[in-house]
Each structure stands twice: as C-alpha cells, then as structure tokens.
Picture 1 (cartoon, rainbow, N blue to C red):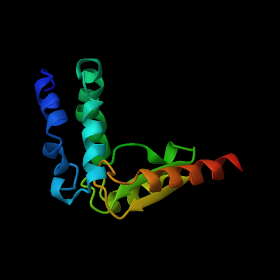
Picture 2 (cartoon, one colour):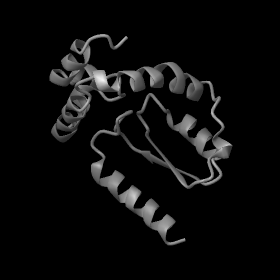
Picture 3 (spheres, helix red, strand yellow):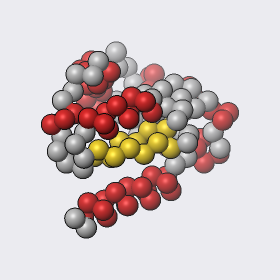
Picture 4 (cartoon, rainbow, N blue to C red):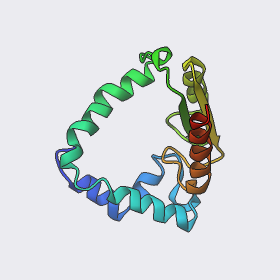
Length: 138
C-alpha cells in the first residue's frame, strides 16, 4: 500500500480513474468539475510525505468511522458535516446519523458532487461563510 508514487501519479494524469470511485462518473462531470478533480489529484504528489497519514486514515480512522466507534457525542464545538446525494462515503443517511449524535452538529447535503464534492466550490464557500459567521456572532 502506497509503496510507489506510480499509482497516484497515474491518477494525476488520468483523473477519470478516480471519478467513479468518488461517486461521480467522469463523463457526468462538467468541464469545471473535470478540471477541479485533475487539480485535486496533482496535490497528492509526492505521496511519500503523506504516506503515514494516508495509511493511518485507511487503517484506523476509516474503519472506526464506518464501524461507528468514534465518540461523536464528545465533540462540543460547532461542526458542519458536508456530503452529497451521490457520495459513496459518507452516504447522506450516514452523515445524518453522525450529525444527530453531535451536540452542535449541522448537515449540508449537496445535490451532487460525489465524495470529493466536485463542482460545488461556490455553494461550499457560501455554506462555510454562513456557518462561520453564525458561530462568530454568538
């Protein structure tokens, strides 16, 4: 796992390989979404400095989250959970279940964008600005 830069490099030159895994097929992305995904994939290189964190995410964080073993109730700060209707991870129902356990949780479900929330820069900025402004005004 992550022993070579080649697989990640390949996704940076062929981002269509990642599109389906993110929940949105490459041909279903508008040109701006395709450009956005290509830019995201290039930020993963080089992999070596991120290797330990990526492995930790895959081996520890993701399984605990999927098995619902994280103590969401102990997170006392305002939290915004964002997903899309077509996201394979987290699916909207799973995101709602997490938000229901967060004492100060809020949920934003975008109509599309997959796991990477592709094509939603404007709506995400607006939602984050509103969320942070609300927190700052309290």
